[in-house]
Image 1 (tube, rainbow, N blue to C red):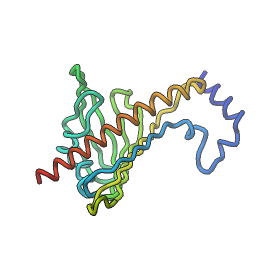
Image 2: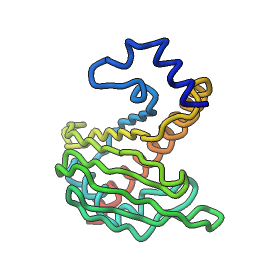
Image 3: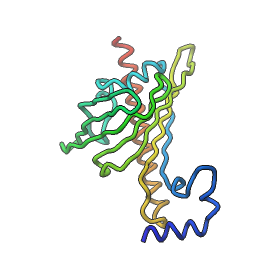
Image 4: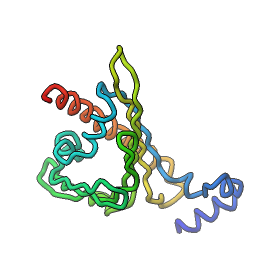
Length: 188
C-alpha cells in the first residue's frame, strides 16, 4: 500500500523528481542539523569525537550509557559501541567511517539496534571561531536518516516527532561533548 501512495505522490508532483540530483524519496528523508559553539579549539573537539575513552564520557544512549567504544579512524574503517538503557537492556551502535579530515570533518554511517539497524549517516563539521580572543569551535552535526517513511499520509506527523526528538538528543549530546572537552582542557 505504501508503494501505491508513493507512486500517487510522484504522479501528482512530477516536477519534484527532477530537481537537481534529488529524487522525491530524498525529500522524504529526515535530516537534522544542530549547530553549537564549544569553548575549545577544533583539534580538542575532534579528539573528543574520535577518542574511545572520551566518547564513553559524553556520548550517551537516550537515558543510558555507552561503553566499549572501538574506532578505526580511517575511511572505510569500522566503529562500534555498546549501549545500556536505564533498565539494563543492552544494545549496539556500529557503522563505517566515511570521511576523516581532522580536525574539520568526520562522517560516519550509523546502525543502531534500537531501530532495527536502520541506516543513517552522521557528519560532524568543525569550524574554528574566535570568542573573546580565544579559539573555539562551531560544531555542526548533520544526521540524515536513511530509512524511508512508510505511508505518505502519516509522513508529516512521523517526521515532526522524529526530527524534534533527534534534534533534542543531538543538542544534549553536543552539550555533554562541550562539557567533556572543557573538563579535558582543565585536567590536561
